[in-house]
Image (cartoon, rainbow, N blue to C red):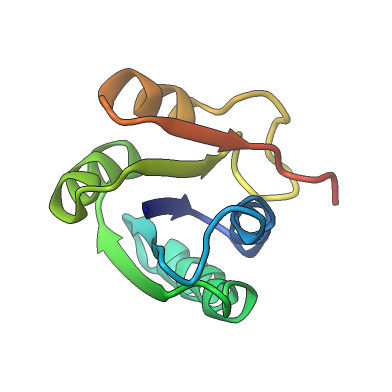
Length: 125
C-alpha cells in the first residue's frame, strides 16, 4: 500500500503516525509531504517531517519532502505522481490556536481529489 500523508506541524504528523502505526506494514510505503508558501512555514514543515521516520520505523519505506505551494493543490499532484492508495491528513491545522472543526485546507482537498482520504483527529494540546 502507498500512503501519502500531508502535514503542517509536528502535532499533525504525530496524529497521522498514530493512525498509520496500526495499519502500515513493512511491505508499505509512506510519503509525508509538507506544502509551504513562505519561509516561516518552511521551518515548521521541516520540523514536522522529522517525526515520521522515527515514529514509522516499522514501515517498509518512509520518505519526506517539502513542496512549494498550497496543500490542496500539492497533495493531489503528489498523490498522482506516486500513485497513492490513500491520503492521510489532519482534520485541521496542528497549530494550538487553530479551530477544532474540519479546516478549509482539508475541505478543499476532499473536494479536489478522487483518491480515498482519511482525516485523522488532532488531539487536544
